[in-house]
Length: 636
Image (cartoon, rainbow, N blue to C red; front, side):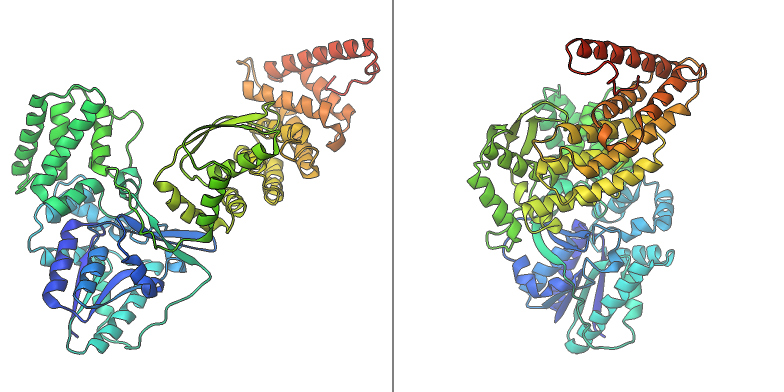
């Protein structure tokens, strides 16, 4: 079998160069790539001429996944160079919606990071802070003749770890493609480009077995191309896979190591100067000198990424750092990071955003929303004021709130009602057209085919992980969006959690929010809603049950607990019709707490004040003949 396996690290320029050189040298019959096999009949769409980075976005039955590509992704280079050489190019991995990818939103999540024991040992042996620094030392800083070193590295990584069930299923499926292609190619070469963790297993699995082409699993899911960005690719912003610092490695890919190092230093200095930070020419020279010295000390021909960054820190940061630099670990910047570190990470990440070719297919939601924005004159730039009492204003408000819920960029609410009880009848929004809008709308199509359906689907997706307080926010968002089908699901979940809640403060937030919607929200159509009434009833009973059991010594007043009692009072006063508790029962709870010496002082004092306040208002109302003196419906 004339098959060449190239194990790669995703988004590695060194691996991408090896892939290109190997394909051009072998001129293979087939180039097989780790990627979604259900997209093979759409490779022409992938190669329309987009400006990278882009991603294949797939969704099915509540699961969404991205397969991202940038200019220096080995998979993208395999695809483009393979096509240019006349090879039959195919993706050979399972579709993104397959159960093998459960709980994984990124196809190219580095397997060696999931099986980290051996990489941690290698980092100790090579005195590297993390796997990214280790990789730079072993491959990016010395990219020549790396094929053998890559094979040894991934053999070592895989030899110390067993694949989980999902990876094992994927490898068996990819092996079937490789055996079939090798059989069909005859004496001509086949090149296989996959994540290096999978390569040792694939070599073993392709020594024997069937040679029939595997079937491509199908589902009701959909896949579309979406613009991507270097920020979304960056490990410093929480990305799961591949190389950090994408803008730096893009420069390595296009300009080489030496120019990439100089470009990084200049970019950081320009950013700092743009923020009026004092950076002199001497600082710039010092940073370059330190980076070069560190590179020589570490045995690098040219300064590597960490050489440059460490040199910049030494030259530009005089005081002690409150946290270690992010390149000494993996993950995003922590709050309070030094301004110079913030600008270094920003320069490393870059601002590059991909653009799709105009002929790229998109879900119907995109065209429908863009047309709706044009019709409602919401596609421009600037501030928009909306009167919610005006039918046209309400229509425009609901469209904007649906886009906000879907996190479509460019629509920022500046002012408006914050709850159902908020007596605000207008809104102000700031509109800012941006390149990311189309991509966000494509991704929003996973939730529904229309804007209302998509917003409702996005809100429903938030329910399982939402706290009890967050559920009331979801309910209000549904009201703002004009979505009535969601309310039953949210409220049934909310009612169940109310019954199990043990925090009075949180229940007070829930009761106040739901009571506001039930009492006042004729504007959004939730006033006197019977399902909301059930939540008011359950919350009121639960708060009273909990506060009667509270006992403590003298302490500062708990504002959250007192607000819960205020909400309870309002429920008894204004929503008696939906409460199952009798007024006498509520009065009994209030009297027992007020007279209980072991009860928290803030509760005892508050209930006494509430009773006195209520008696005062009853006296005033009765004096004008509005209510009888016996008509008090509060906690008194």
